[in-house]
Image (cartoon, rainbow, N blue to C red; front, side):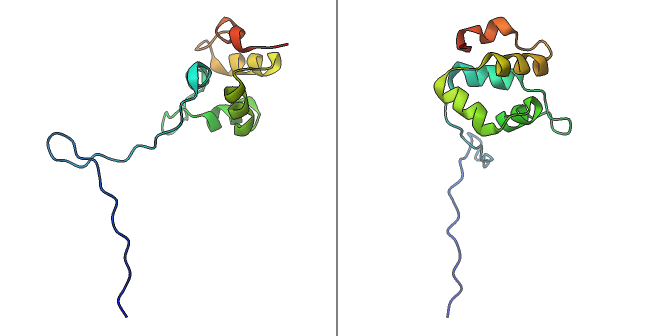
Length: 101
């Protein structure tokens, strides 16, 4: 019996012939996602920003932020929490077009 192995995925190669590391492509989130990423405090160890990290900082689930991005609408309470966490990177005026009452 022969050992089965996986076929390696083809890697992207840059102009010098070096393999390019994989980068995970996320779906487009629109301008509200851009504001969420801008508002997200960077992770202390890596400096990375992400929607799950923002959700944890704000105290909601990442699904709640995803739902807000899909609808392009925020509650006033969630908008204020994001502004509080943003430390000036995003203002309430930036989020006003997406806030509904």
